Length: 107
Image (cartoon, rainbow, N blue to C red; front, side):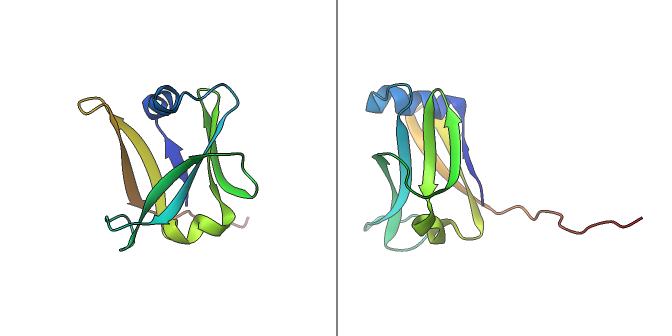
């Protein structure tokens, strides 16, 4: 499970939310009638400081993060946040989690 933010997306958040250097932006699952990764939930955002971040990426002076209690939403997936210039908006892409090679080689 990974969180990946494009530099253009980070700049969009800074501009749209008027975020200052050192700000933090949380991604979290919220109840909604719209579709997200899970029926009845979509991804929400909140400008707040992290308490127990599990996933975190810093770009453009802003810390983007997901708290430990919210990881169920992304179980088995990576969250990729892109900027769509044609719409001047953000796109959330849920990519199947990449398998990591954990086998050890012995000599």
